Amino acid sequence: MEISYILNELAEERDDYFRAIAPPIMQTSNFAFSKVADLRNAFADEYSTWLYSRGLNPTVDILRKKLAALDGAEDCLVFNSGAAAIFAAVLANVKAGDHIVSVKNPYTWAQRTFDVILKRFQVTTTYVDGTDTDNFRKAIQPNTTLIYLESPNSWFLDLQDLPAVAALAKQHNLITICDNSYCTPLYQQPIAMGIDLVLQSATKYIGGHSDTVAGVLSGSSTIMARIFNSEYMTVGSGIQPFNAWLLIRGLRTLPARLERIDRSTREVLQFLKTQPRIEKVCFPLDPGFPQYKLAQRQMKGACGLVTFYLKAQSAATIEAFCESLKHILMAVSWGGHESLILPKCAGMQPGEFNPSDPAHRSLRLYVGLEDPAYLVADIAAALEAISHLS
Ligand SMILES: *Cc1c(COP(=O)(O)O)cnc(C)c1O
Image 1: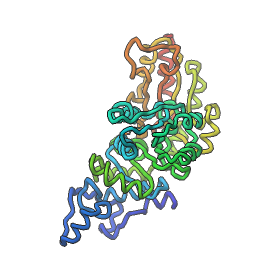
Image 2: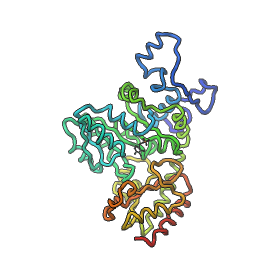
Image 3: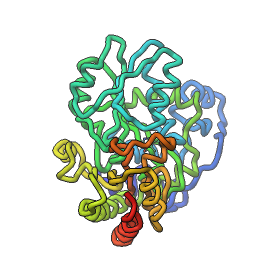
Image 4: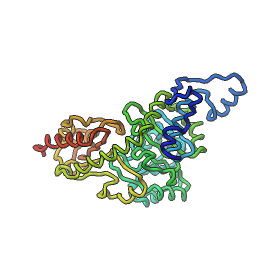
């Protein structure tokens, strides 16, 4: 299916709503029935009809069909956050006593799910360096049920070889989940590479305007129906119609935004690489990136997030750099219109900073939709502002 068709036409039954170009926001909690038999059927199979908006809703369904098609998946569910999508996907595939193999440093709240919540139910997790597929194989135990991936990682940007891990998981009958937030389905297609469940934080590029929190989970109709009837309905973490409408609107411009950000990121990257104060720059599609060949093989593109390492003897220097930026905002998240900076040392207690650990000196830059020259000038001025600091 062509991306233009998915984004502009798929699932939009305009005869049902006055031929309006923009779909209506079906802001209703419940749906009326005229026959008891129809209501009975709806109770028996809530995943096939509109009964109550904690389950299915027409505006959300338009979005679901588009997102599933983009992922090349049979079905998808949309949640009120990426974290909720992670939680449902993981919870649906473990029981007490099971074991998970996860790539190291997954998204913070995925790690909290493993280390804090699932631990209470005797589910254990082994974290592995995912740059070598063999590490996943070595970590598999008789009670392993699940392999959890995030490629590229949203901070250090390291990749996992998705077809290779998917093949390994199939040999051992394990479910694979991949967080695809960095690439979006436009730049990476984990399902086509054999991954079972793919998720993304729609807060990032799908919404694209820093005004909505949401998450997407895609997979086979069998798995998705199972998740709908258990985790999705019981936790009640589905997306609301208005937020679904904002995401449909975000999808219209997704390819245009990614293309623009891709071009700008390369310009900013070239500038960063020439700066003596910057020790190292990480970007998956940069020829100097250690997994460049793998990135070229499994990703159609990359954009937005760049991690770089500042030469600094103290956290104060990094803080001064961030606070000297006039246009690039200091905030979490990414994928919106605005460029952002996030220093690793913000997550550390004063005194914990160790300049000989490069990770402590790392900063994550998100390149948004501004003119790249405007961003480069801002970074250049902030580097100038710290030139007298060691
Ligand atoms: C933001 C993010 C999430 C969580 O999504 P929310 O929408 O914030 O709940 C998950 N994974 C990655 C890689 C993220 O960047």
